[in-house]
Image (tube, rainbow, N blue to C red; front, side, top):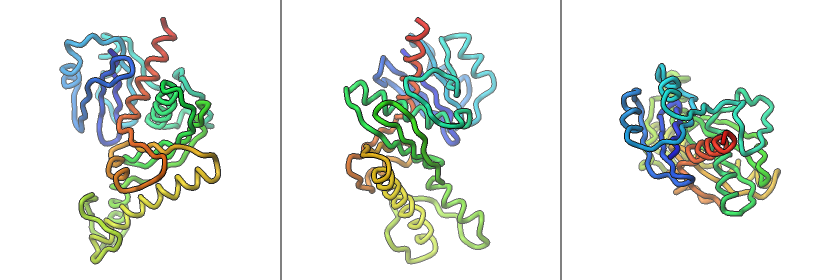
Length: 249
């Protein structure tokens, strides 16, 4: 059994895999090594991979190294894809794992497709990987909650509005609804526009949505050849762990 741990800016996600199939998972906002230990106890674990873009508990790496085959995802980690990013050291590990997951999933299905991976979380990332497994880069923009917080933080009188995905529409009829609609509908328009621009200027490609806001966006944005893969980053981490495990055997 493999374990993938993704420490993000907002949440920590952990998933358990038997080969390529996820068999269990958990999500935390606040957690300790004791919480992790309880999740790991009693399982036959072959290896653990860690990706940390957010703050991690002290001694986490030592804790994992003492018990399991351990791999921390770094810019130097061996990958089943080709990373052409000019500054690999600065590339978000979640972005790298997501495109790896997209490519490896297609490869297992015997399909050769170009993919634009859109991860809608704290930020929204757009990452392109072609059918040959070459990651060519992408873009970053503010996420949904960040847009709402920014409008409050950088103005004198605009209120802080919750995203409330059940209360939005095309036209706002007061300041609260105008802010919420502007953030939500604006993000939807951005995603549709970005997908169209990539397809027109680069190549035909599938669109894959993942991340915390992806289910809501997938249900409300209708883009041809688009797919919702909520656990893509964790899947990609497992693919990277499997690749390195085979290399060490």
